[in-house]
Each structure stands twice: as structure tokens, then as C-alpha cells.
Length: 355
Ligand SMILES: C[S@@+](CC[C@H](N)C(=O)[O-])C[C@H]1O[C@@H](n2cnc3c(N)ncnc32)[C@H](O)[C@@H]1O
Image 1 (cartoon, rainbow, N blue to C red):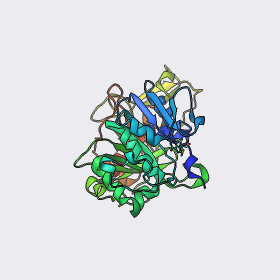
Image 2: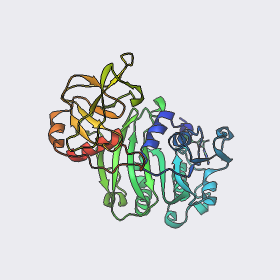
Image 3: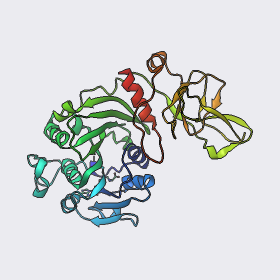
Image 4: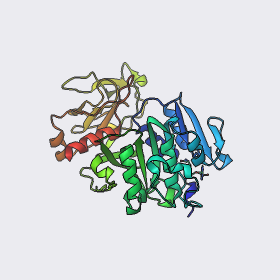
């Protein structure tokens, strides 16, 4: 099977881009841009970002991307340290000749010898990063799991910060069943840090573990059991925005001001609207946006739809309820103007308490 041409599906590109906790990047690049799906997902989130792409195939050229038809590895050497966000789903293939581009293997990468193109592309991508820039890269699962890549993993964890390791659903690339991970790597050296470990299920990412920098720097990125999901969290987001609120009609639950005993407020929508998520007594409701983002309560009222400013955890089990009783969501909020949390932030918080 030809693994070098599997484009990232648009939906998963958007899900992964939304996982990045970075300020608006000025220059975003994908040196194997292909479909440009990763770049377009970035543009959807950050409309002012400038997009840059290279590929050996001219079919990737598009008017929205500053495109060069060039080997991405050569481009990276000429444009080292210029980009605040680098996106990559490189070709998974053998190289024509080892160390064909010797200038790639300098500084921290000096000792690496590889016959794999995706590893050369990984090095090229890291070289493109500005200080504190972030790389989102999709790699075969062997990169995270196999002994063969331990040395490369060690070097990277010692010179960069591995922020997230996400096992992608095996259906991500259609029915090819390619096993892959998405890694989020920041160009900063940290003595101690934790990586979030997660997996994608459909279009959601669930974080269920962490791994410390000691292990990462030893090249052990895989000492966890991703299938040992302690608790199944069935968390849903409402689909009705506040612009549809009216004076009367069907009651709907909406977010409310930040308070110690946070409860959702009650609003109304026209009877013609079709809400998708309903809260029932015993469900957990979470405010997802604004000053109250992360505030939650156990709902105790009549069955009612929720607005798109809320998440609802359906039928939480008693262990989860017992553990989170009296606890406040305490992860850092993202953004300055808009404060929000994602589904995976909340799941990650719950799992960290359950650990
Ligand atoms: C797996 S596809 C991914 C495309 C895109 N990044 C995405 O996520 O949809 C890999 C792309 O790398 C391109 N490619 C292969 N070798 C390359 C090289 N040496 N330099 C730049 N691009 C290359 C292929 O033409 C293909 O478009």
C-alpha cells in the first residue's frame, strides 16, 4: 500500500488544530502540503494567519497558499526558525539514500541515521520552528511505540517539549487501517513537564493519562495503556446558539454568571427549532465559554435542551460523581478575549482526578 499520499481528512485536521493552545500564529507552514487540509483548518481558526506550503507535486498549488514546488527538506534548511506553527502529515516511506541532505543532520540531530523519510521530515519540521513555535505532526505509531526510534525520541524530548501524544483512530485514513499518532511539540527546553496522553474517537479527543518528562527524555513515550479508559464519558455540546433566543416558546438551559454554586440559567427558543442535546435530572452540565467556562453542576430539573454554550455529560456513573463532588475545574483557560474550554479539557480534568 502507498502510504505517502494519505491526506489528512478535513474533519480530523480541524479537530487537531483546535487542540493547539497557542496565540494566533503569523506564519503557518506545511512542507508536504498535499491537499492543504491542515493549512486550511489553521486558516479557519486563525483568519489572519499567512499560509505557506511546499510539495514535490505541483497539484498542491492553490491561490490561498504561498506555494513552492520543492523538496520540503531543502526548503526547511533554507528557512530554519521562521515559522510559529508547523503542520505535518509527511509521506511514510523509505529515503532514496541515507543522509542525502547532510545539512539536515546538524546540531541536536547530528547522531541520527535513518532510512525513513518521515523521520527526515520530522527533523526538517522541527528546524522550521521559531523559539516557542509549535509543531503538529502525524507519524506512524511505530515512531512512538517501537524500540528502533528510541534514540530519536530521546533527542526530541530533551531539546523540545512534547505537549501531547494522541493516538489517532485507525479509521482516520479511511479503511487503510494505518496506525498513527498526532504529536504536539513545542520548541522550548523544559527541565520538567508532563505530556497529555490521549486518543481520538471519531471527531473527539479524549485525554486519559499523562507522562512525565523523565520518562519522555528516556525515550519511553508508551508506558501507558490507552485502552484502560477508567470511565466512559458521554459528553455532548448543545446546538442552539443564543441568537435564537426569544421571549417565549420552548425553555432551554444556558450558561450563567460565574459563582460558587453555579447553575445554568433558563431561556426560551421558538418551538420550531430542533435542539439536539437534552439534559435530564442527574446529568452533569458544564459551562463551556465565557467567564464561567469550566463551572459545572449536577442538573436537577425537568428534561430540557441545552444551548451551545453548555456541555452535558449524560448519565455520569456514581464513581465519577463521588470523585468530582466539591471539586472545581482548574485547568488554565485559553485565549484572552474569549475564555473557553474544549470537551477534551474537561475529560482530561476528570481523568486526572480519577487517576
Ligand atoms: C501523506 S501526504 C499529506 C499531505 C498533507 N500534509 C495532508 O495532511 O493532507 C504527503 C505529501 O507529501 C508530498 N511529498 C512527498 N515527498 C515530498 C518531499 N520530499 N518534499 C515535499 N513534499 C513531499 C506528497 O506529494 C504528498 O502530497
